[in-house]
Length: 222
Image (cartoon, rainbow, N blue to C red; front, side):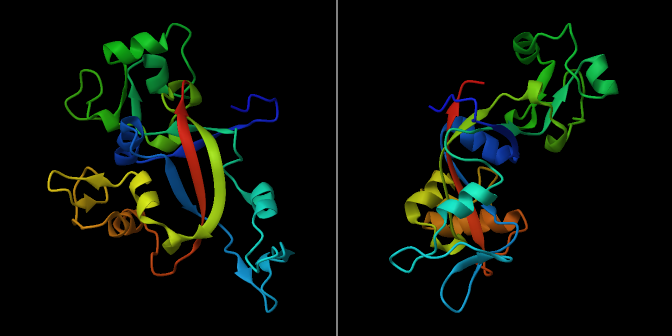
């Protein structure tokens, strides 16, 4: 594990089904679109905007420098803290901003239902209807999942393999068929079509086959 001062920590958003997949150990990688899509020039060089990242000796795109220069998620050894849909039944938190109250013990709050997470299927304390806080508004102190990056690369979306689709957290049901998540949906014999459904459920364009960041991680203690 990289514990050097140069290591960084960044937030990352996950949906409730993907949070459950991480907690279950089924999801150990995430793919995210490269914001400015790379292209290859007439000589086969790997380019992003006006930046040229050249080629390697085998004619394949050079991506290491591109990753170091451009990846918004970090490098191996860096950490990602997961933002998920949440709720905290504490007057200071409810009134905002979402600063940690001095009298709030995080461990106790999770145990007694003061701090809860939508991925667990729990309604906020003493409420019949959840008034969940969006994941984008989760503060660092409320985070319960910390991930350490073990590998970063860039590839085309449709280059995903059978094994990689499985580690994206797609769900295998009782009939041994694959679907996008544990929330159901279309069933498939293989995991890649299930991952395609998962990608499209977030608004992604599978047919466009974009370049994506592939971030592999392991869960570590927060």
